[in-house]
Length: 217
Length: 217
DNA sequence: TAGATTGTTAATCGATTAACAATC
DNA sequence: TAGATTGTTAATCGATTAACAATC
Image 1 (cartoon, protein in one colour):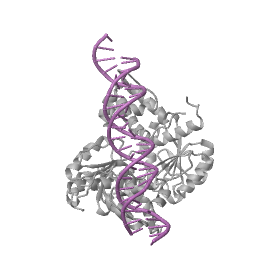
Image 2 (image 1 turned 180 degrees about the horizontal axis):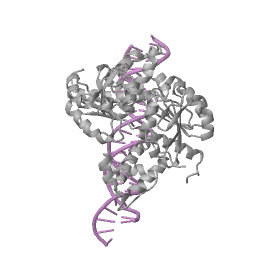
Image 3 (image 1 turned 135 degrees about the horizontal axis):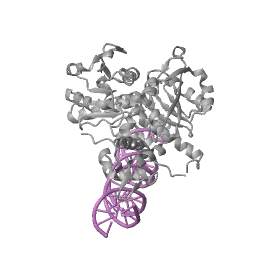
Image 4 (image 1 turned 30 degrees about the vertical axis):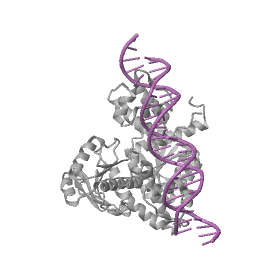
């Protein structure tokens, strides 16, 4: 088994992927860690160290082939596996996520959308009809999605997650404003927009304090 | 001037704030770093170190007063300043953010929503009427918002941001799938849902590899 | 006072950066 | 071959954890 890759490296992978995708679609064929570091505002050392957690993708004296590196990171991230996802909760957040995040372009498949509000049953979100939550078990059993996007109130979050785990879901993206905690073998990614807003508020406040040092002493 | 607080500490602040808000509304009056650490799954040492970047909020032998600590973090984050924000882009993402993130409950004020699509002018999002982007300059000059939420295509992101900076905006929350880079005196928080999805994909893949070590050697 | 728990210093650990030999 | 640039080891830096004296 591979040695454990640190959280910091993992967090940077999507950013590398983003830049490489950009370069690739800009017809750039090769890039050195030095040039990439210049564009991404990180050190070349860090790029080489990060990539070498997963193997040697470059060539001395040449650098990295953009396409090959991009595809390698794709594999590392599992974007080539065609994961199937369901969306639970067809409110604003759910709808936005379904429409906005180009699932397909990253190799994911959104295969079903569920809600427990009968008024929403049958309405369309993109190309998907909203299905009753009551049918989720049968749906999962039949189509075997691996991931669920939870865009539901935090009051029901854990209950829903536990059910879905028992039906076979192995990964959750959670949008509600409480952390989802699950057994070790389940992957979770919490997205807290409120936290981002507070961080922005902190940064703004800090900058104002620097411009105006004695305002709030 | 305060010594620079590390990024890691700042990133944890909103989480502390969340837990303290929870405790406070649950009528908990005091808490020790040890008990809080147990609940948050971090070390007590880290909690004490983090808080002490900003001052001593506790009392030996007693611990921390929940209400007082919560309000102290509120001030550190700048949530008590009544920052005014505008939303630029009334598409799905913008709408969701406006409705979902309880601005007001965190002390922010959403004071205007703008879009450049005439079909949207005058439509309501929550209690706000969508205004034409062409009027944004006059609006900013008059109402002096500090923050802008950008929920617009990445193709126009930098152009819009630069305009808004010249009108006086000092902080941006950016939802488009490219990093917003700005001068040093401007606060930026990038939210990339696509990155979160990729991280989830990585974690899922890693767990599958551990269960099935030789599947993809 | 005795017990509890902070604030803070010191020790450890891990992540980042620098340097360079290997090699394309 | 000479020049460039990787992969990797070593050095540095910063963040986390441990420990404990201060003190409520």
